[in-house]
Image (cartoon, rainbow, N blue to C red; front, side, top):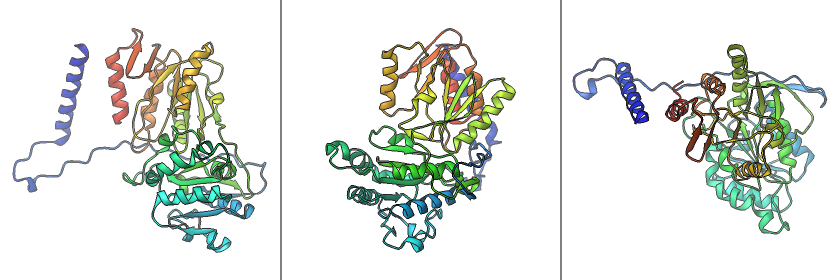
Length: 418
């Protein structure tokens, strides 16, 4: 009853706020009335911070993210005479210019356009890879990868398994511009990595910077498993740093700890890495909370050893995809094998997990970028000494915080009210 009353009060408050925002009521015919104000969409500003210039790979050059992709593709074509690049408009350089100049350098038989058919692009790439060549397919936007979902999940991911390892398409890499830019609307803003994180047999990789992008892309191209490489398109020109000219590799399935911390572990990939770095600084300054920051880099298979260290941990997993509430499991260094097996089975099923010990752990994404201030609120809630974990659709909690309040906080975080 108390929860119902609180919900009614919130609805009433929301209606009153909406009426106040709408202003005085205007009489007259509909065409004479002013248009309602567009709803405010929260967006997070972030500042790209380049990594230090590496010294282990020789000469470096200033590159943005799309130039580092071009450099990686150039290196791959030069090293492997069987490598081919294909997709919509790649022959003239692609809509983001990632393949500019490659057709002129390597010829129209190795860099060529395809029809506007994502299922055909991936199906062709599978055939090329099975025949023994290196296939580098481009889906023009990650939002349009769904017509190829069957080819990726039912064909590419399972080819080795269903043939008893007699055949495989492990030399297939699928590139796609990923994530939002703030003005891409519904078909040019999506982050679909979670759909593929449920599928054994493929690898899913998302870089955070030009330096990371080149090394990870070359590793994907050389890996003997089909790989999906999502490229944060908001960083194509916004991210600039020193990148080695010569080829180099960054290992897959190895997360990187960007900042040490003792209170909370924050995990992200792609663009959101830069957001949580700012949140970590805010939490340290305003709350005195020490945050460990991890760039997961490879979504599948992800690096459990780095994220789940042998200690009690609190993890906030931050994504850019549409808002949802993560399911949390309690775990600490004393967990039994059976408890760890449950967590591992969830990871194998492809679910994004959030491990927590004696803490509340919420995360929310938005259609644009997950706001630093909402994440800051999450970190504030993490300091509440309540033992809470989400299991299926039920909430189990000690008496320090009430279930209705938890749901209200969750809804507000999800819809972007903060």
